[in-house]
Image 1 (cartoon, helix red, strand yellow):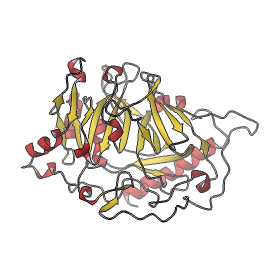
Image 2 (cartoon, rainbow, N blue to C red):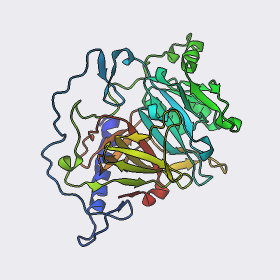
Image 3 (cartoon, rainbow, N blue to C red):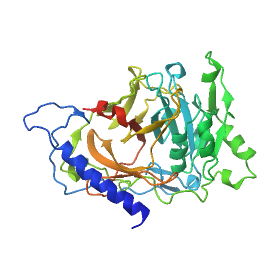
Image 4 (tube, one colour):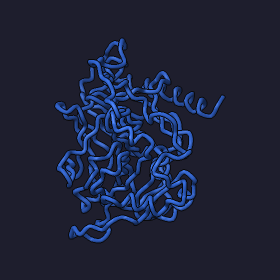
Length: 375
């Protein structure tokens, strides 16, 4: 059996075990919230259709369906590789600039200290549109592994020496500390931003190295990153699966900034909240919102007493959640190589289909997984 097939087989077994737990609540219970430590009553639905039919949708001329969002973007961007920008998530760094331009946003625990403060990593395909993004801070080994999934160039400002061995990989291109400083009245560590023209200059400075091409390299993973619904169709989880859960508010166990996602029924997207307020971009006041939410349970290794860590993100069969349109579905996930794409599966071992649009991804530490709440 091939390596990927072995990983998927393990994932299927774990998914089945996870499913039994999710269905086990007393029928008389009336709690409308879901926690991974408290099972809930599933929403019953037929599995007649996997997506909601829409009227005729055609990809506009001169455009193609993005491999990152599944939405139409310019054909001129088809071969352009994305960037992955590390964004400080300390309260002093707010407001963030440019985060609403991201196609995918990761939120990861950055340190076990300071109430497990998180940091964002923004994946941006059309990076030429960036006017100002950040503020930019250091990276961690996990970010290098995740950026590699997208063949993205990682944009950061240094990091602990633990990152060095990961940056030696032939697929791990990065720009560090080469971005503009903005006078914003804050301490220096909060003043570095990716500004207009910065990325062109960085790529030009590496023009003699083919691995720093603006276009995808040999390490690009083929096809779309996710299993998107066909363009013009909408995934309705309640029609795909018999077991789903209501999900209009997601409280993540990141104590420092109290990360929360709240469903906006008008926009059909999840808006990101932290430090008790809705996140709004400093550039255009737009909320940071997402069509898709992917939550992965993942343990980690702490390197030292300073709280530096790496998530054990190369794994199979770990639990997770896919959430969209106010509905959550229990899943498992698989990542079978350093720069290989993370895949998400249902209890039948079938790759889940997700809606087109922006996606939020978080890796919740295994030791706080029971504190994750979806309601």
